[in-house]
Amino acid sequence: MGAGDYIIRAISSEEELKRVIEINMETLPEHYPYFFWYEHYELWRDIFLVALVNERVVGYNMCRIEYGIGHVRKGIVKQGHVVSIAVLPEFRRRGIGTALMVKAMDSMKEKYGAGEVYLEVRVSNEPAIKLYEKLGFKKVKVLKRYYMDGEDAYLMAREL
Ligand code: ACO
Ligand code: ZN
Image (cartoon, rainbow, N blue to C red; front, side, top):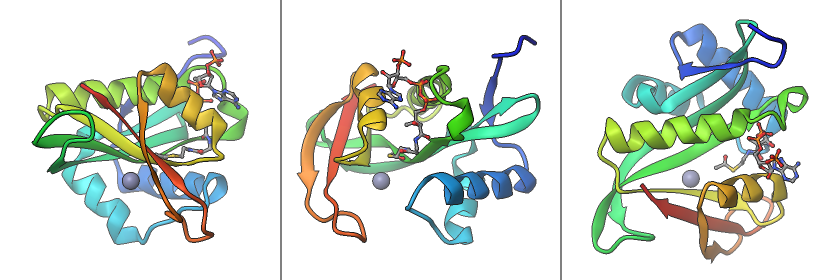
């Protein structure tokens, strides 16, 4: 493997889950109780991805599958929901976030038959918004005071 190489794959152990939770604690203000992480680990492992560099977990993308009123499609649709994605600061801007999103969206569609994918993101989170827009997500609506500190979220979505 070359110096910049990384591997994206499904999370494979509770040990990795603990690393993921540490990365979340270091990189995002939104945290979750252990059972919430564990539920995703148990139920949707194909779309709970980790990024590895030299066998070390440096990023993750935790997603789930839901049924709901479509954000970009009509009627009730099967939706992939990107709950939380993060990459450690020293490993950013080398395509890992993109790869974590692309692989999750592929599995949402191919393994779960999801018709669209959505997520919420802080209106101030330019890096993430840029990443999602590059992948074809559109801002669907503003969720007022979505976060604990009062900040608004964009709900962003795209078809699969
Ligand atoms: N400023 C501007 N554009 C950016 C930035 C930045 N700091 N970072 C990424 N982008 C855009 C660029 O267009 C970039 O393409 P380029 O490098 O060719 O210009 C594109 O996004 C893809 O970048 P990647 O290298 O694939 O993404 P990265 O591995 O850096 O991860 C991420 C992006 C996950 C948003 C990272 O910045 C991060 O972990 N941030 C902190 C946690 C976070 O905010 N997570 C999202 C919260 S919302 C949610 O979880 C649903
Ligand atoms: Zn969400």
